[in-house]
Image (cartoon, rainbow, N blue to C red; front, side):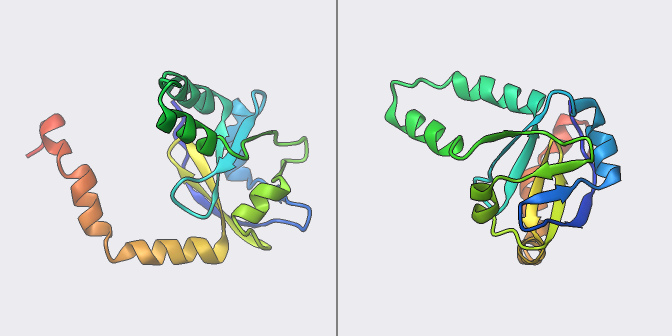
Amino acid sequence: MVNLIGSYECKIDAKGRLMVPSKLKSQLLPMLEDGFVLKRAVFQPCIELYPMSEWNALMKKVNSLNRFKKKNNDFIRRFTAGVKMVEVDANGRLLVPKDLLNFAELQKEIVLSSAVNIVEIWDKNKYEAAIEDATDDFADLAEEVMGGLDEEFGIS
């Protein structure tokens, strides 16, 4: 189980290359050999970096969908649109393909934000706006999402 930690500000050049910050790279080290998958996020204007093991686990779930149902086929097509296999090169750089760079509107300043088992790649201004927008509702969201777990863990 992958459990990535941290948010990191860095720069991306005009060709879409970014230097993976050393603290994040050290967490990704066990996964470097297998490579990664980059894809468009479903709910946010960012892209997601999946370690190959996490991508394969997710694809196992997706592959179990009945493809004789139109909505399942539509979902698979949209979910996998623009998916690219990528690697971190020997210099610690990651190349973001142009179509994904454009989708997330990545400018020079970006944020790599861990989201448990994946890394979200954001334009810095969009990331800060998304965090700010979520601040007002976060207490209610946290209670709704995590509040029912106390029975499960024996917490009262």
